[in-house]
Each structure stands twice: as structure tokens, then as C-alpha cells.
Amino acid sequence: MGIKTKIIAPLMTLVIVVIAVVAWQVIDQQSAQMEAQYHDQLTTLAVTSRMMIHSAAEEYAHANAMTFYRVPTEGDQGDTVVRTALQHFANDPKAVEYDIITEDTSGSRVMYAYSPAYISDECVTCHEAYGIDVFGEKKSGELAALFGISASLKPLEEKEAAMLRNVVGASAAMLAVLFVVISTAVTRIIGVPLNRLKQATDALSGGDLTVHVDVASKDEIGSVATSFNAMAENVRKLMEQVQQEKLGVERKVEEAVREADQQRGYLSANVKRLVGEIGRISEGDLNVDLHAERNDDIGQVFNALQIVVKNIHAMMEEIALLSKAAVEGKLSTRADASKHHGDYRKIVQGVNDTLD
Image (cartoon, rainbow, N blue to C red):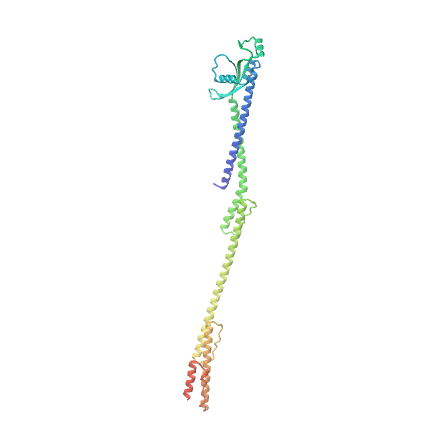
């Protein structure tokens, strides 16, 4: 389930519930109003029928799909509704109407409205004028009969059903429009920015460090986009730093290799030179070049060898001095052995001892 569906589904469910509740309240209110109007119409007709020509009231009732009742108080009152109405007026002589809703044998609801007809002088005069005697021994003020009107509520229920169908149709149309509006809004507000974020994420994971998400909204989506841009910038800076460090390491490696090559060349040249100079010394050539290029280990070897050559030079000079003195007959001439050290002193001293 996509995020769009996750957002739209609860919204549409909420809208459906709200519309259903509102529609139900509207239908219920309209039904109550129509039923109240129906009730008022029946009650008014029942009340006024006792004060008008009863046949006219009956004709009006039949013309409007109603049933008119003239129920005398004497005789068998087998109808439960009539007995209940008579009992109601007996308990409350001041009541002017009684209504009730019951179901007929077919299960349809029927509304009844009854009004009591008490004997009055006007009633007696009217009946005498038409030659109708229905009061018998009853006196003025006594309950002579009930006038009632009944009507099926099926037409009212059909109107309610039609109204319900209209409300359902209008609600369905409204839901369709709301769905399109909400879907479009969610797509523009959430779907498009999220798609941009997804494309940017795919690009970043593919190695595109220049990616940037342009989202102008200040909501949560905008915050996520801002965080993504900051992350992409940090990754870009980190990769630049890694690249610079890589270049630095490569330069150091190159320098180390170059220095190693130079050191190897230096060592090779100086060892070759040292071997050559030692060979000349071994052949008796003391005019050798023993200066050290560096003050390192091989330089110290050159310095030590140079001291050796210097000491040999000094010893040879002493021996040459003794040889020259001997040729000149100066046999008392001796070399100064104290100028020499170690075995060199022993050699010079040995020459002196030989002359002695």
C-alpha cells in the first residue's frame, strides 16, 4: 500500500462517516418534520370534523387517501385503538385529541387521530335541522362519539426512501468530487515532493554527489528535503576530503619512492667510490679523495678511512725522515713516536729501536 493510499483511505473514511452522520441527521429531521406535519394535518381534521358537517369531512378524508371514523360511545368497541382513545378521554375530559401510530395487517404503519365530540346546543340544533337523532337520552356536555382520521404512513415512508436515495446519490457524487480533489491535493503536496526525494536518493546512491532537492514547502516534507540536502552536502565534503587525503598519501608515497631511489643511488655510488679508494690505498696510493658527502653512516666510514690515510701519511713522513738522516750519516736522529697512537706508535718505535 502506497503512502498516497495510506493518507487518502483514512481521510475518505472520515469524510464518509461525517457525510453519513450529517445525511442521517438531515433525513431524520426531515422525516420527523414530515411526520409532524402529517400528524398536525390528521389531528386538525379530526378536531374540526366534530364542528363541521361530518359528511363533508368524510369526503375530504377519502379524497386525500384517508379514512374517516364516527364512533359512538355505546355498543361494542372491539377496536383496541378506539378503546384506548375512549379510555384516554375518560381519564382526561379536557383532552381534545388523541393520536397513535400502529401497524396494520400488512405491516405498514398507520397513524390515527381521534377527537371527542361532547354534546352541545349547536350539535343538537344541527342534528334536529337535518332530522337526525343520535343522542337519545344523552344530555348536553356528555361524550356522544369519537371522530377520527387514519392514514397510512406508506406515502410518507416512500418520500423518506426517495429522499434517502437522493441524499445517497448526492453524497456519492460529493465523495467522488472530494476523492478527486483530495487525491490531486495529496499528489501535489506529498506525492510530487516524495518522488523528487526518491529520485534524489537514487541519484545519490548511484554516486551523483551534485544532487539537490528543490522543495519550497515549510512542512515535514520540506524538513526532510532540507535534511537530505544537508546530508548530500556533508557526503560531498567528506568525499572531497577523502580525495584530498588520497592525493596527499599518493604524493607521500611518490616522495618516499623517489627518496628511496635517491638513497639507493647515493649508497650505490658511494660504496663503489669507497671500494675504489680502498683499492688505491691497498696498492699504496695515498692520494685518494675521501671527503664525505653526508654526515651519515657511509660518511663516517669515509671520515674514518681519511684518518687512517692521514696516520699512514704521518708515519711515512717519520720513516722518510729517518731514512734521509741515515743517508746523511745522522744516525742519532730518531722519529718522534709520541706523535702517533696505537700500532702506528709501535711501528715508529720499532724503527727507532732498530736504529739503536
